[in-house]
Length: 355
Image (cartoon, rainbow, N blue to C red; front, side, top):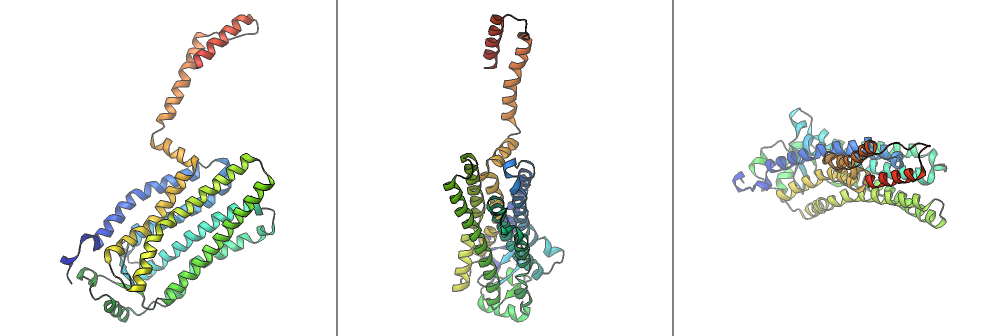
């Protein structure tokens, strides 16, 4: 099969172009997110500031890792492909690139776990026994996220025989792919899927338990009215923002994960769909940062102010400052010796000028 039978959507060039375009938008948005969290986090959110920053940084690493550093050209239903990114050109082995991206995905999940644990601890467990175990709990999770894929890494097959099996499964591969430096992660998917599945179940279970504890304790606090209604409303609103911030990016992953499952189970190959999967995977961090900015009112207002170059603020300031000048110029200061009627007249003039 030669390259003339390929549409543009099936080619590495299409994938590279889309990922480069995404990077052009991703970097300023992530910088904006860093600015909001570090410089515009209000006092009621200070306690969660560094947990949110930790999640944003791992999301940023994931985005740049897929869009710029690795840019994987995947060949589902096989677990094979080759990188198109920067790391390829500086000689980083493909297996190291693969391990790094899988690890970063787990780190993003662990950062989400950290965010929920931080909320639960500060709101409900600050004076409970959990405070003695929480640091160990987080350290263990970050350790597991960094090394859970080691068994699959050491089980990477000998490439000559592995590639022969890939070509048997995908005999229709075009020349542009056949001549590329293909890498096979596994022919037997059992160990890869088991490693990923176990880590996913662990993180989802832990996050689910913490989310449930937050919900139940918040419900109990509402019934008992242990804090003011204003504080309760703030806490509920903030938790809803976090739920939305965390869940929205994962909704983006439903489509590529569903296709990947379908492709592997039924042996279906479509390179255009594979390219779209990579693009969707690369969108996770961008959507996470955008959701963080848009769901939190303080960040949203700060970004709007920044992007409009403070035009609204300047207009508001000018409407207040000019009358104050007129006020000082036109109306004499009121002293203790001034007649009460004059004081009343001056006060009414002041009010009219301010309005």
